Length: 216
Image 1 (cartoon, one colour):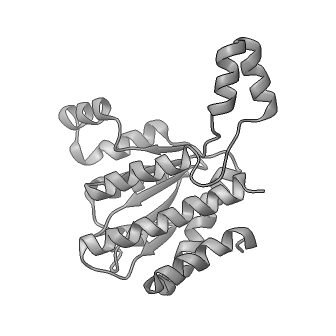
Image 2 (cartoon, rainbow, N blue to C red):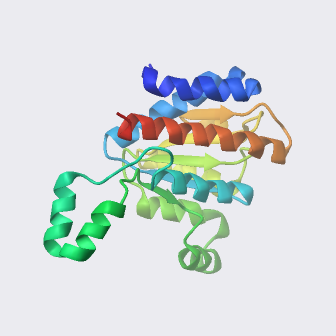
């Protein structure tokens, strides 16, 4: 069940994008997987291709720093910073923001290009997931078709490692929808139209997570 303070974000989402009402339960189920992950100290690993790669970085940017709510460091950590360096520590204590750990697997050019060149282009996300992922984490695979080979390879590693899989796809869902713990299949078939609906969904997740972990 969703807490009332996060439910409002889903309600606003479907009000602004009525076509998402049909998949509201999918969006909510995916959020609950993310909430459980973070509540237990896990992290989110995200991958996609092309525009979905940009989405992966976008999501990480919203989770790793303030989105709408201030996320100050704890008083205890602020004091430790000041003890180490009275000037820099005070500045850092004022400026650092608490994070929900999210790693966009598309962002590590040296590693990914080396693996693509030396080993296997379709296994690059799987390799990163194997290296970064731990049991209890979540893998968010973004694929408008649901059939991206490098995303599907990553899901195999995720499932073998005890990492839950969320698929963010288009209407058909493809192979990704069949193996994901939760598949969010937006009701569009054209790639750009699918991507246009992915953004408000993941913004909603970020708002909900921020409300849950940093809201009053």
